[in-house]
Amino acid sequence: DTEVTQTPKHLVMGMTNKKSLKCEQHMGHRAMYWYKQKAKKPPELMFVYSYEKLSINESVPSRFSPECPNSSLLNLHLHALQPEDSALYLCASSQERGRVNYGYTFGSGTRLTVV
Amino acid sequence: GQQVMQIPQYQHVQEGEDFTTYCNSSTTLSNIQWYKQRPGGHPVFLIQLVKSGEVKKQKRLTFQFGEAKKNSSLHITATQTTDVGTYFCAGWGGNEKLTFGTGTRLTIIP
Image 1 (tube, rainbow over the protein chains, first blue to last red):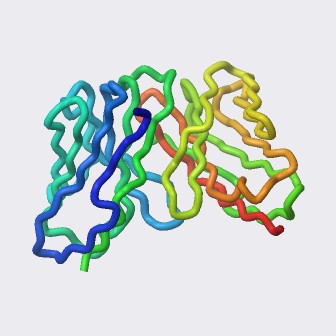
Image 2 (cartoon, helix red, strand yellow):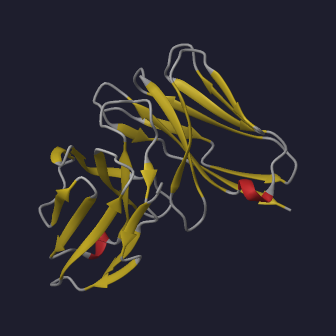
């Protein structure tokens, strides 16, 4: 299995809703990432997990809450989002954080619309 | 912080013409990676360059890493419609983060 699977593919939520994005990989990768991508912009790093521990939080607002239940799963819990949070949310994984010999494998993303 | 810029922002080429995108970092990089994102898709890893002055080829694609490890280029020979998409370079710097360049969007005129 050489894929990163993200669910759901599309999500529309109100500003008072609570929802979760899910990401799964079975490649044995020990680093997992959340990126946010606005239209016609590059992906922007949000969070990095290494060996199931949060390594980097790029000053992301607390309405985004990441969770890594085990080495294969990564969640992003969403609460009280704003319309400007609408974007493509990408999950990625790599062999290990800090080992620079491998590229990232991205999931197909969740396209989030906040209304 | 580390910034990675790409030029041009957009490129429209006739099918069969060549295409080049350039990537410049504000800081020296440990390595540089290249990704392709098709319209409506997600970034897909193409290649990684590590050594100063390194050149790698993948069929019609040629990747170069500058001598000072602050710039890189991707050249596509004889473009095809399947080459359509946005090409991102991504640099790994001292902050142990992969920073994506601004991207070059390639469209092909059949």
